[in-house]
Length: 356
Image 1 (cartoon, rainbow, N blue to C red):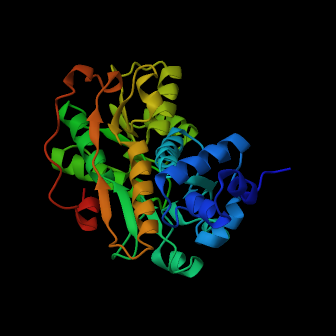
Image 2: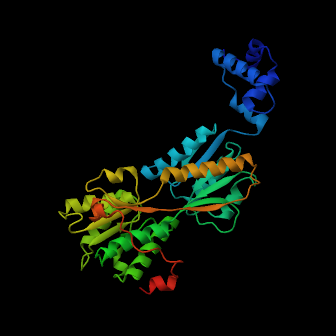
Image 3: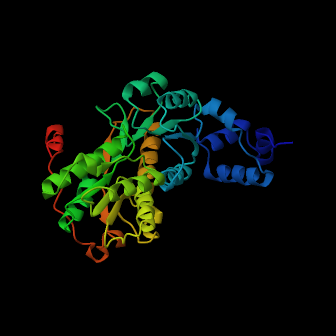
């Protein structure tokens, strides 16, 4: 039979209420008594009833995480950062992927009610209306890489525009006048910002732009493979490819290798995110570095702060900086200190971008 809280109290010579206060951190207990209770609980292999404890404390000690997908190194690194921080604070995770289905994410939001103390959500399709409609008003939520207006929610975003701008300016500065872009998924906020940075860098560097240089992609390796083959068919052929994430860049490298092209001799390639595998592919991949696990860790820290403050804290929106990591695929491994000029003071207007 499972050991009960009454047995722990009897063996430790204290009341059930005292044992409850120790495991729920809900009241004053002397350090000596606390140590004795923990020692008895360990000896008896007592595990607190989490459901009962949730009823008492109105806390589940769980954090909900909703991501567009669970496949790939980017998402595994985000989860790793969240999990490391959650465990340090005594929380566990409930993780789910919604696979770019808006109806699915709204269903998942509703299913998390009463099961978690707060939510970390990454969704380019999510807006304030969807959150407020499907979540209790007092449930803390932190948004990752979502377009957010106002101060209704905590949010963390990557500097997608600046990172893409810097990488493409670097390619242009090294003589590439025709740079192809493998775009990310349609209607994805990150993809749109990286496309905007690509266009602005070409404009500011005086390089060529045409709609034919922007190739369809969906952030997966297979789409990068297909797009690279399309780039090879263009006339004149581009001399560099910038992929909106590393997975597509790795797919492009495979297509170029199978086509007999030398990288970077005949085609330079660069990606975005700097996932762990980027340094180990051949040739090693130049990329825009994002501290992916730190993104997850900061989101979890922010969420736990909101939980402790009972969601009465001041909401903050933060942008994580990026930096270039130059490896063999762009032919500039030894030029790591070389940087293009600073990013523009502000985003280019849609009219400016389309006028290129």
